[in-house]
Length: 504
Image (cartoon, rainbow, N blue to C red; front, side, top):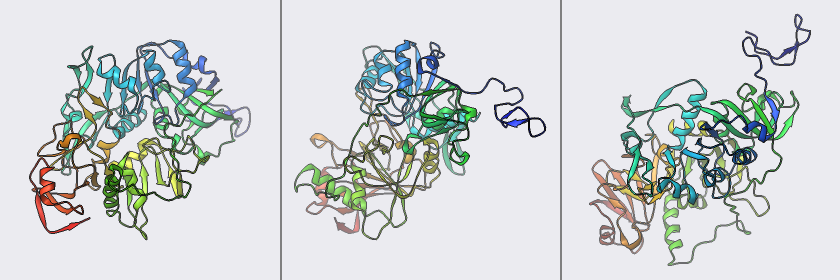
């Protein structure tokens, strides 16, 4: 079968141009307006929407979809934008009846609609979501993954819809099939395909070949390949032949409609800048910030030369300020960056260059960008040496809970379930030892929904360093001025004390 581009005479009567393939006529992408493109989205459609936070979202297409009034949509996206922007617009207009996502984040209306029983939400680990979409585009109906084994995602019971007004669960998730391969537990996940995909690229040629820019590739690449109708919103349309074939991220065979963006805000969710001096400013002694700084300074001592490391949102990310001299560490961000650098200086922030916390960043020489499905292939495949995360609770056996308080607070698991799923990755938890009011966070067993079972290797708090052993927790270090009695009073389970106890 000829899969080239043929028209006119040459090469035995044909010349290279046009699009031709036996049984595949009429597939050439059509350039149209956003309004014309979304007119093809039917009521009740499953719509895959690219982007990560607000980075790489198809703003024009979302706006046109809102104006169309089409409703009853199932939206598949890593998250739902923010209040009043991105997919948040379609939530406000009640055009979305169900979300399949990994992260609620700071979208208050998303969280409110879910908890009040107004919206169905299937929360899915970020890497699993990316792989479900990738598999759907590749014609693979299902696959086994170690992510989320032993959690409510595996065992069932995760709330999909609450009763109207909130409180009780109306619809809960079903359990997944589990199997053991080579001594490792896995669960079965089904692929996701869409009726329509709305994606955002930097550039397209008239053949539909897409090029993304920096971290805006994220979920756009796999979602472009997994729908019956893919609509690509782009910043620039160039003639065929203008894009080097080596630079194409998504081949035109996956793209059906091309829309030139008429106006793009490219809003940055969290503009984060480096200090004018370019150096980290220590916290004032005796403040909560100083306690957090002590935690992350100790966490940074776990870095080893040559490591690839993923740092979670919030406190864990601060550990990058304290990488020891003479140590080279490559930071990975699950939204598709390897080689994270410092925050940019004022005026150099870039909406296409953010980390997993939606903060503006830079990259170092030797960095690379890639799609979300490839990013989590690195993570699940054990290519990331260490992950530092925050937590709500940790058990004496190393179970972790850090993503949900049922019926009260739902931020979503994001990529955390994937990050703790690889047996080859060291998992370090950084957190304050107790919650508000002195409530225990380190317990015999977690009372909140788990992120992972027996996945934590080390806990670093403002009071102590604990390692997770075969028989429970071992305190190996205490903070300067803290006694073992202080640690015991703040801990909700028993622990051993190392014979060579140190201070930090």
